[in-house]
Amino acid sequence: MLKNFISPYDAHIVKLCKKSGLVLLGKTNLDEFAMGSSNESSYFGPCKNPWDLSRIPGGSSGGSAAAISANLTPIATGTDTGGSIRQPASMCNITGLKPTYGLVSRYGIIAYASSLDQAGPMGNSAEDCALLLNIISGYDKKDSTSSFAHKKDFTKILNNSIKGIKIGIPEDYFSKGLDPKIELTIQHALKKYESMGAKLKSIRMKHNDICISAYYIIAQAEASSNLAKYDGIRFGYRCQNPKNLWDLYERSRGEGFGEIVKQRILAGTFMLSSEFYNSYYIKAQKIRRLIFQDFQKAFEKVDVIMGPTSPILPYKIGKNKNDLSLLYLSDMYTLALNMAGLPGITIPAGFVKKLPIGLQIISPAFTEEKLLNIAHQFQLNTDWHMQKPQNIL
Ligand code: GLN
Image 1: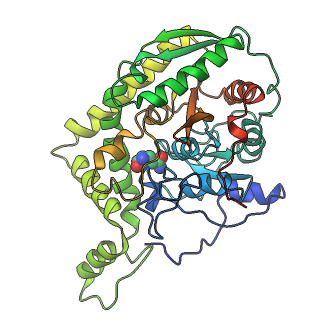
Image 2: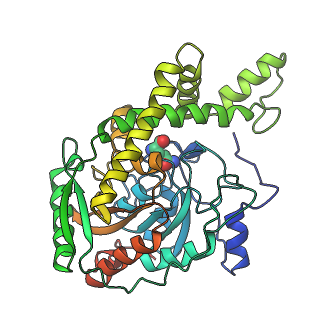
Image 3: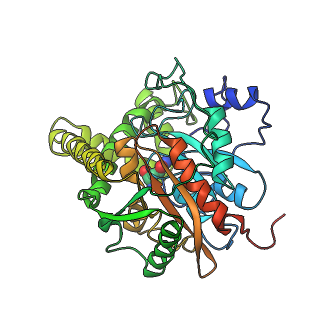
């Protein structure tokens, strides 16, 4: 749909990066319109995981994660609607932060699901992410959901002690679907935090299991609306020799969009139809509120929440092409944060079969400096994040 599209203006965060003197190397691969968890639905073909070239790098921002992992660039940006920064970062052994909704301007970023989308930093360490977040965060009047919060220095408390912090461990994150070897790696990482003076406390995230369904209703509904403008007239690809106006719309969208995108537009349109709006969209919004309340309750007892970023290891490219359920399940720990608008970071925590495992840390809204501090302290005491795949530049 946007193959040869050259944006007539820069996104707000691109402007900020240029202003600060960063050199922009180019665009990275991703799933079409950021829909996916494996990078296999990219129009330009799948991106590969530098740790094993036959495997997915995760998605949708797999290109950014792979580029950092392979030392092609020290930092990159990604967008995260349901996990697209954290999940590929975890699968490529890098650090990735999804900021609080509203902390980073969405102006100029192609929308997938506007109430969930958020751009954020990816890098080799929490410190690098903090430096990039310093550049790209802040109020922007061109994004109506941009936060008025004062600009912060996210590197300021990186070196604070984390002794005595309370870490919530949701029982619900260590259940069906989690690879037992990943679970073991995460338990080791949690022990490490304990040895650094943190206190672990078991908590519940009761609605996490219905989060996937609710997320896909909201995301697809918003996507169907956001992507309506790509009709061959206003924006995007236009088909050759249309017979009439209807044919132009139908073929431009039919030929211009990939399969996953079309499936989601259809599902979203269906769920927003007057007949089904109440039983799908409204219900999903109610579940969204319950998920938010789960976090609110948890943060009355603990400072941060920790668990695995992904329940599965990066799988072989093409292996699960027809298994949509696996694609959906691979985001089971990341989606809830977008539903609640909360920040989350993933940090390298070990390896299983020479493939990277990420630990996800979640904190209350607009407490990224704390999140980065807790991640940085782990990285001062471990060297998982320093590991690089073999045979890279
Ligand atoms: N995998 C999720 C989806 O396809 C999340 C993608 C994202 O965060 N952009 O919707």
